[in-house]
Length: 254
Image 1 (spheres, rainbow, N blue to C red):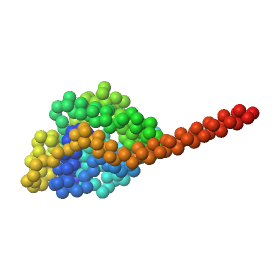
Image 2: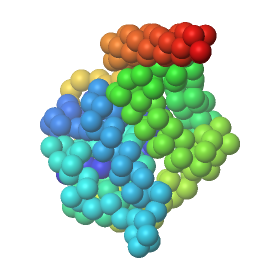
Image 3: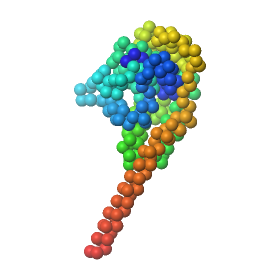
Image 4: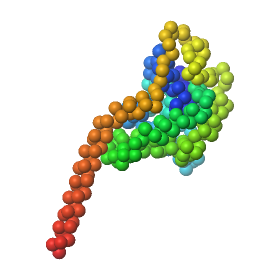
């Protein structure tokens, strides 16, 4: 692991991922792996519970071996859920450079996060269907309910701003200045390349995903899963109705 970009989601994480890939960090882990690779979702959920739900011995640390189970092939990482483990990642990979990607306008970050994670990412109709497909279940109830909701102490709307400010302060306090770059998308290539000791590409800095882009990409990823969930729900409903009819028939014959 060479680069840890531990700023929270909606802080230029997708732009940064595209930039890191352009700079040669081909295997850069991003939050998109969660809906794209459902098995990763299971690992992250278990790591989250190990850290935040406590253990009988009081230990909460996540080890390098723990992270390697999901990040072992990566040389850089950005976005949620990894950013929720910033302290542990910095300890687990002490030789990695740390980027604190920020969005200076706290209100803009807050509005963008609400629109993304509390709005179009979670259509209410999909929540019920998620119980009829394992991959949907782990995304909605592993990532969104267990990790995202709990990271913000039960309510992003109420706690998002102060959690972000404390997260930023924690990363600053944990990381030696010479190993930390505070960066925002508007800074572009130069400070990023200087920090990583890379040549500045002669192309515009890459864009990331908008809230609408994110919703469209998720709709594409979840399309087959939703169709499968609907089929499973229909079958389950038919079984329940069949059993109910059999029970009624038996009762009437008594």
